[in-house]
Image 1 (spheres, one colour):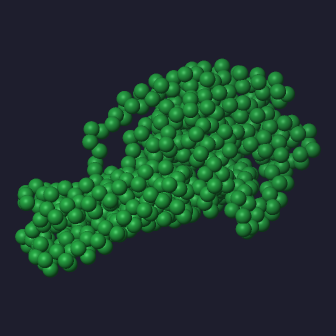
Image 2: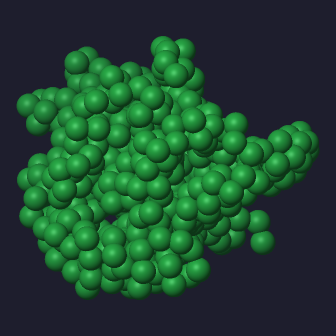
Image 3: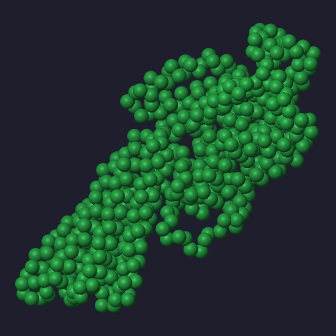
Length: 604
């Protein structure tokens, strides 16, 4: 049978359908879990063993080791998890991902997937049109589950037959009988294939199909799976590229763990294969290595029967077809046993070396002596797929943003006392302007990240929190604008040689004291944004009233002072402009407090 370009496009489409099904299934579960998933990952990492169990359970739940390790990278990036904790979760994720391979192997060959795929979609789609967010998310999960197996069936249908198309895959066939050299070659192929498609599960599915078709033997299919363990590191590595040093270290730790695991497995490859074969047979399955020789003999001695098997025209009740089906199921079982055994043994050895991995990562990626002042600390430009978990990063970054703006308030207060020294004043004012530029950039980059997050799959609570963070981000930037405006007032006063006496400076300073206390209250709330206490809210509102009352008192007193000739009219104008800018800071602070109260705190 000639393999056409259309067949190749169909194969490409089948792989894409498989990957899309995995994506929808994973994101549906992430969305359904919402905050609970984030809380589990951040709480259950007290030591390496609980962290490992967390990695296993989360990865088994969302059906993607790439997604769970990307979550870990984002948590390290957001300062919610240490590198040691991250390593234990990553190690567990490698075991958790074997759950996906078992689903593919068992459901893909022991069950006729066409019998349940369409019924699942029939049940899932109505759920997606319900008003309940959780039911919608579960509907998406079921649709993704069905699409995954539709893709698997189509891959099986459109993958080219090596024996029928020898000219296309001669380069592969000539490397299948090189002994241990073939193992190394197919290990590299598995790594490269996973690098391209960014899914070890898809590589496993392709290897499983190639082996069950009898095109490669059981050993080489396991070599492909082993190579996929390294290739799957590409997704968290890409996700960490725009992150901080800690995020890069966690992605590097994932790569080192999988690479070292593969290195020890290569010289013991035949031992692991033999053990996998023995365990498979102990569990009542046939020898998984027999299928390749059986299909090879059939293609030579009975090509007509072989073609019927390849075309799918031989009835399942036929004696030969029944034998082939049984051996195919054994291959899937054996490959899953191999994958599971390798990852469990790897985890059992490497978990004791967690601190060693941490030290290696710190040595390979040391902290820079000086971070660029404008660089974001917790978020970057990477498109991390776990939208629900991005919210924690933004909360931490907004806390850093607020701290930076607090420094601008401090600069304003310094400027007030430096107006008699032009050189020092100009240096500090230039620094204030630089901080204003940084503030504008931070606001834009945080907003861009939030916008990307909002386009992902979010729970209703996640959508509410993203909207609130948009508002908080904008209000903090407005505080920075007011700080810059205050500096401009003092700069214009300096240019016009307008004088502030000690009375005016002390009055402005009294406003600074109240504004600084209001800002500190806001910072405290942002550091624990979901658990703000009622007394913190009341203190913030009381401080806002104090700021407004002081503003009114100073405004009324200013008119009297000008009339009494205590200072000249121009001094009074600049004085009131400065007070107005400080009062606006108080308004923006209370806007942040309102948003935290209404949209961010957990309702008890």
